[in-house]
Amino acid sequence: MKNRATRTGAHPHLPKTHLFKLFALVCLILSMPGVPHAQTPADAEGDLQVLGGSLPVVQPQLQLRGTQALLEAGDAVEGDYLAEVKFTPDGSAVWVVNRSTNNISVFDWASQEILTTIDVGAYPTDVAFSDELALVPCLNSNEVYILNWMTFEQLAVLPTAAQPAKVKVSRDNELAVVGCDEADVAEVIDLQTLEVKYSIPDFPVYISKFAFITSNPRSSLYWSGFELSPDHAHLFNAAGSDGLLIYDLQSGDLVTTIPEVVNSAQVQLSGDGAYLLAVTTGNDGVVSKVDVAGLTLVNQTVVTGISLWSAYSPPAVNWTGSRVFVPCFPENTALVDTENMTFQTVGTGNSPDWVGQSSDYQYALASDYYQAVVDFETGAIVGSFSGYSIQNGAVSPANNRVVATDPLRYESLHFFEFETPTSFNWLGEQSSGSELEGYATYSLNFTPSGEYLTAVNALSSTL
Image (tube, rainbow, N blue to C red; front, side, top):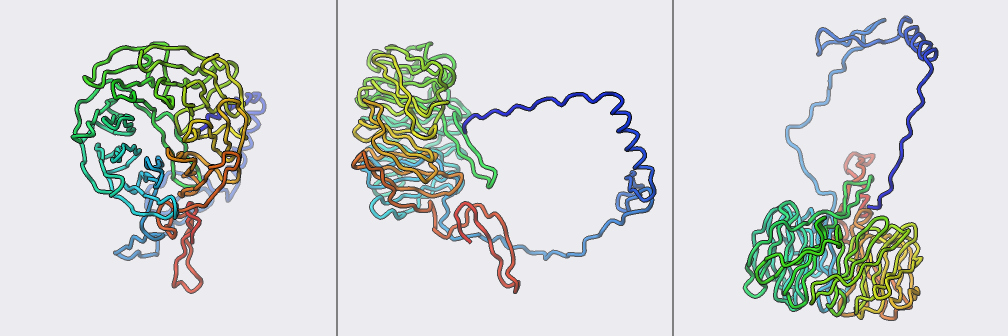
């Protein structure tokens, strides 16, 4: 949620003469005959006594039936309170995490239809993939589900510390790390044995961005991030105030701390895995570049005069880590050159809620109401699209395809492609559950005959 502060001014004091006149006027009105003035009744169940008469307490005449029926406003299967959306490693399917209905909607990319719905634990928040496995942390049941993403078979359910919220998998598919919010613990999972190897304490995990809307009870949550080195040797977490914490993933021990890299909830590896890029938001924002093998700080680029904003995503990073693309204000986005420690702003239309990079790491993507494809090297916008509000999304790791959502306004998935980067195309939209599901019922009304009850479902645009 973008931070738009409001200022309330103090009302000036009224002169004493005005206060006296106002007091006298109120007393005069209350003393007039027939003006009700409440007094404490002797019997709370009796009539309310007032000056000039009494107002009877109306006793309810409606007698409710002793039995009630709980009716669904639409069809099952439901997919409510969308969290993360992720492509499978081959780009053939998309997994949509539904927080409040405790399930995963799996979409086929080619048909844009739901292949299956997978029930998991209470309040799933994230999903991450290895070459064979999908891991889903469930915040309220304190467990992580491990499934085969090709067959949907459930392979294990592992208990975790309190509130597992975020999961990352090493690029060599050997280890996964689950970050637990309430406990501030990292659970390190061996993906060969499907067991928790050990737990790392004092591991900061927190909600780094959130949003809500007044027209329905939906909300969006995004947790601070961390990264594993490609060879699963080290774990990096810069979310806390103590600096970038670097752990040995063989033992779980804290190896070193880089104190200059603080409060950086958004981190991302470069495409080649050689560098970690960390973003510290605010005025002035800072982009830190860390050597993954050497565990040292390479440099920090200060984005002067501009506020770097948080996003529902890590920063977008190119293959070598020489370019980092982030939302900012009052401009829209900042493209940071980490080699020369300079930056340029790119007017993408809005300050985006979500950014990403193409599968070949040549282009950055910005999504809000305006979508833009930006050349990492030049900062030029090569493709664009507008018309659908977007809050978060994902880029296929296999090709230039995008899925995106705006879960506060409509719980559905938008499909895009930019196989030709200069042409960003919308392909369609599908509900995260049944197309006749009733999301966020806004009003009810009987038909004139009294035979039917209509339900207007604002979030799913159904009746």
